[in-house]
Length: 232
Image 1 (cartoon, rainbow, N blue to C red):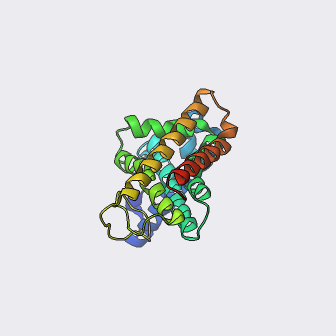
Image 2: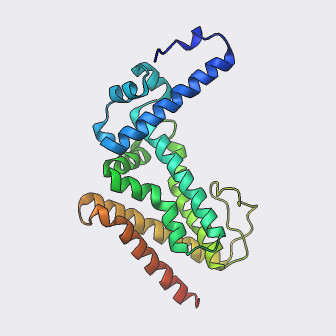
Image 3: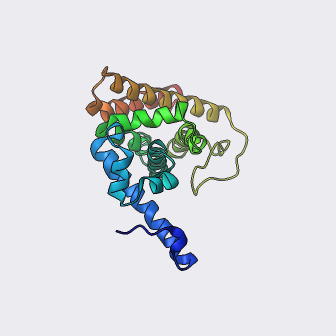
């Protein structure tokens, strides 16, 4: 495929289509290479060759290899959020709804653990323009977990304080109740436990292949203890 300079294209609509096609090819190439080889073993030259663009074009559209990974992971987390909230609205077991929310991270751990580690490095130390979005997405997981718990456990008729986009079902927040506060503590415990499970798997303390089962077991433990303490 010949990559014409964008300034040489005849009209604006064709230029936009050309840009969209390049972006699609770059992201598709990155998704395939990161999935098959892992972030640490993919070079920018390989990404450019797979997408059939020049290295300069790759940097112009993706910023860097790390920012490209961040973009793809954020998209996956968005999809996980949408799926989890839909499940919560269908009276799904809260454990399974939260597993759907966390599945993008768990799936990446199973495929290539270094992808998740690279993503976390960008959250902690990155300087790219997508870092703020990524931090919001990660910290917002707790808010989504709270919303899943509220919908599936039917513990409070009030909406929780907004802290990021919860999807189509988000409404204007009302003052939090004591139960809401407890749900937020539970969500924090869940998020912290999952993060530790991921770290332990990366350090070799636990098997990466056992990660989904470990997360599910810990979720059931935390939820069952909360329900006992709440008299559910």
